[in-house]
Amino acid sequence: MWGLTKKVTTALLAASSPPSINQAGQDFRNLYSILGEQASVYQQLSPTLRISHVTPPQEENQDWTDVLDLDAELMSKFENDDNLFSEVANKHGSDKPLALYLPGLDGFGISASTWQFNDLARTFDLWRLSVAIEDRSSFSSVVSSVVKMVEKLSTSTGRPIYLIGESFGGLLAPAVALNVQKKAEREGRDNPIGGLVMVNPATSFDYTSWDVLAPILSSIGFLTSPAEGKTAPFGGLLPSPYAVLGGLTLSALIPSSEQFKRITDLVQNIASGTSDPTGILDLIQDMLKSFELTEETLPPGLLDHRIKNWLFVGSDLVLPRLKDINVPALVVVGNEDKLIDSRGEVKRLQEKLPQVETLVVRNAGHFVLDENVNLTEAILYSKLDPLNFRETKKKFDPILDWKLPEQDVIDETRESTIKPLEDAFSPVYMSTDANGKRSFDLDNIPKDDGPILFVA
Image 1 (cartoon, rainbow, N blue to C red):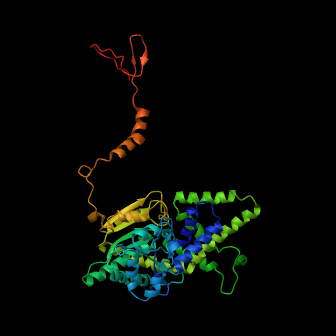
Image 2: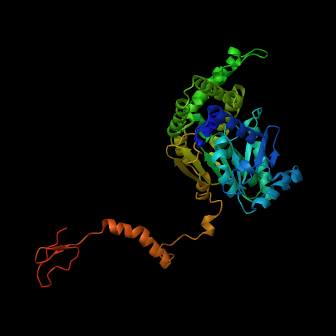
Image 3: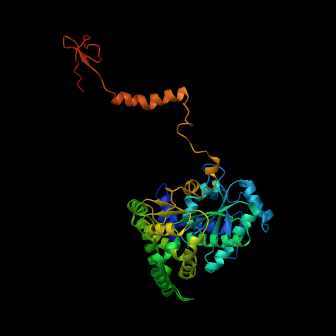
């Protein structure tokens, strides 16, 4: 929902070694630029709305950002042609199900792009929505644009589409699904939506205090922003109160307790390794610069617009109609989400959505799509079943389908697993002969009839 803090959190959590705060912020600016501007294959829905194809990595150790230009020739041939979708599908697997990722309030989806896009793009023909910072579209306008694109994707490929919505995207996804479903019913054709995935969905917005807190934050931004032609306080050397308060508030609310501890430990490690007073000053300056990400990526005017025109309006339009959705849905939430009431939303959605399945991730917050969650597997083995496992894979019968392993497998297993246990825990038998001498066997037990005393 709040891309700026996800950027900072992702950089710190993903780092294999402690980066500088400044480097983490710069890494996020680079990723933010990729999500907002760079894509070899895309379709412009409006001047500020775009869907882009996520090219699947070609090798195991590659990232989707490493192959951004792989499909550039398709764009040059089919830029204004609806055949673009089918050509992309033919190149990367026309039998793959389609998926459209809808981001949070930031408009880009930093968290999913960091840990989820690689697997999703390998399994699905994956497209993602991006919304420019300059966008001031209404909720209905965004829904309408996405619906048109879903119709194009469906018509061009003839395959079902799975909508994956995170945070605000989890509110946008059911709105799109309802519109597409209604249109399909009017025209007497099958619904092209195969299912919904709602990750910490903002359908719980009405049950949070953000309707009060967000306007306060945006008001602080308006009140403290310098007037046109004026210089910011302290010559612009310090971040604005909006940037600091917003950054601190969201940094405390978005990560889980585990993630927050990792971030604070990392900052402490960076600081403890900096004994030079000049280095400490650089660290403080880097931290101040990191707050500027708040104002850069979610300025007060944008926050105010999207709270009022997206979350308020979207909640009023979508919540009463959730019961009408006729496709399966998977709801993924973190049980420590402090930003919105995701844990409570699970119970509410179980009552409202006719075909819902839930996944509650323990010790996870609003930033649930980190390295500990494989969203692709969660989707594949849910009721959405995009690869038709239930139809194509016969249920395993432990009696009829069991087969004896090869002898070498049995021998290897016995030597590596069973024999060490036998050596460590098997009983040792001893017996004593008529002269009182003991030996490690039972040979000295008298052979004549009579009772035998066994001591264990």
